[in-house]
Length: 282
Ligand SMILES: NC(=O)c1ccc[n+]([C@@H]2O[C@H](COP(=O)([O-])OP(=O)(O)OC[C@H]3O[C@@H](n4cnc5c(N)ncnc54)[C@H](OP(=O)(O)O)[C@@H]3O)[C@@H](O)[C@H]2O)c1
Image (tube, rainbow, N blue to C red; front, side, top):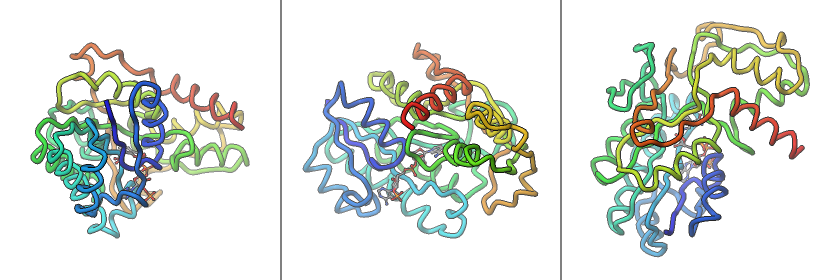
């Protein structure tokens, strides 16, 4: 099977290529060679490569910036995903579209099921949800994988930022009223390998358990050997981000359970594994 990855230089794209390369014919394209907003480029590249599956990880992921650059958010996350789906349809390829917990508002305050109706409260969430709708419409055989609070090696993410602060014993203020499930890219990609021969549909894939960003940061400091008391709690209102974020965005794993896919580890086990690997590479 030949698999093409979009957004290959992103944290998830890199992990997909790393894990799948031993078993599949993998090809990754970053933004420089494949700009998903350019339909002609997407179509001609897919015609040339003719993959059996496209794993679409490319996205405009700067959640606050999306509030300023609303058009760009829609162009990349919604129309870009639609371009990839059109190209997939033209060559009869399958597609995995990576989506987000931010398609939900958080008002439910209980884990979201795969068939709960999205109700995004940010431009990023709206653009990712529009991407879901377009992809499902253009390519009904596509699979939507929603994940949350993603971190991986060499990525721009919360864990790496906190690790830098922890190393220099810096005091940080972190919000304590947004609860979700951190997800290690290595665990998400492992589940993707199981999804290759499962029916298309919507799947939620995150590490198990829940925490606030504050609790997550404290654990990162602890595991990095720094003083967790340096992490101070604050409210979302005090922190003052541009984009609204769900106060509770945990995702239920009904579909991976229904398809007998082994559940990923809990978020603390995953975090320990990630930090151990980071420290080994230091
Ligand atoms: N990060 C999270 O917490 C999180 C949570 C839930 C879901 N997700 C979803 O998971 C997927 C992977 O996210 P990630 O964390 O790996 O993000 P990432 O590290 O920001 O990677 C995304 C990649 O897409 C590229 N990209 C941006 N615009 C593009 C365009 N027009 N054409 C082609 N490539 C483009 C980016 O390039 P540049 O950096 O050069 O712009 C980047 O390399 C995304 O679909 C995201 O929405 C992420």
